Image 1 (cartoon, rainbow, N blue to C red):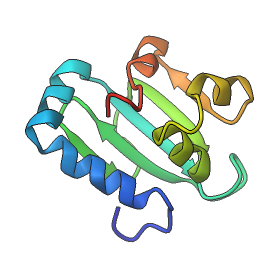
Image 2 (image 1 turned 90 degrees about the vertical axis):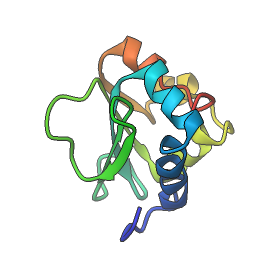
Image 3 (image 1 turned 135 degrees about the vertical axis):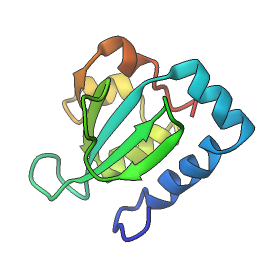
Image 4 (image 1 turned 180 degrees about the horizontal axis):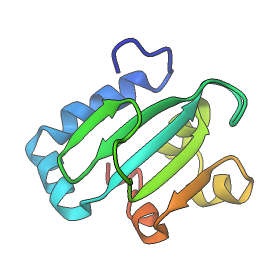
Length: 117
């Protein structure tokens, strides 16, 4: 994501490129939800958050808050987001430890497995 100080900016850019590909378009058809990511650079709830929308209805990744109601909202630190995305951390364990907050549809949240992205 341009203009972002997040460590995960390159990953989000790769996701943006992937969604424009054939495999990405299949993913959009398969999932079809809108995810709002609140990513804190260091500590959840204390740092300025960066808002990212992963729209798997339209196949778009964009910076900024979502205008409307996303299907699920995830809040976590940049490091935890990277670790979950790379498979180093189990999202369920991160949630149980309180390092991942989820609002919205639990079924939509469960469909967002990093291995699918």
